[in-house]
Length: 199
Ligand SMILES: [Zn+2]
Image 1 (cartoon, rainbow, N blue to C red):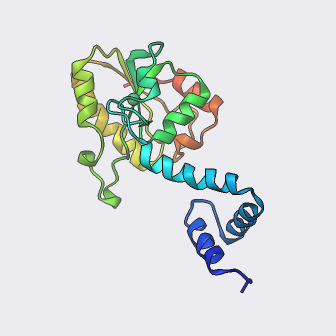
Image 2: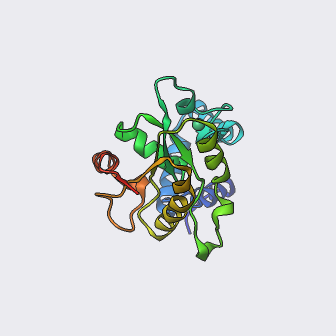
C-alpha cells in the first residue's frame, strides 16, 4: 500500500471512475497536480464544475450547447435543409473533425437497445419528426453506429421517416461492421458520408 494521505487517496478513487483511467494513471495525474501551480489546479477543478453547470442540450438538435441553440444550429453558413442523424454528441464532434458535412444534425441521445430496455420512446425521435414536418427538409442522412443497436435504430427511423416523402440515405460504406462512428477516422467518415446510399 502506497504512502498516500487521505485526500490523495480520495482523489485517486474519484479519478479511477473516469473512462480509460486505471490506478496507475490516476497516480500520475495526482503527482502532476501536486507539482502544478495552485492556479492550474484551480482551473482544472473550476473547469469541471463549469462544464457541469453550463453545458446543456441544444433545443433544436440536442447537441451539446451552452445556450438555447448550439453553434452549428446558429451558424448561418450551415445548410439547414440537410439533417444528419447521429446517436450522441461525440458523433457530431467526429463528423465535424472530418470537415465533410455542411448540413445540420439531430442527436438522438442514444440508440434502440432491447437488451438495455431502451426503446424509440427513450430517444429524441418525436422532436426529429416535428423538425421534418415543420421545416423544408431536403435530405436526411442516418449516421447511427454500424453495430446492432445502430442498425436497429436506422431500420426504425427508415420506417417512420420514409412515409414523410423526404430523401433518406444511410452512411455505412467503409465503416467496419460493429464499429462506433465516434472512433472512425476523418477520411473514413468523409468517404462514408460521400458514399451514402438512398434507402
Ligand atoms: Zn443544435
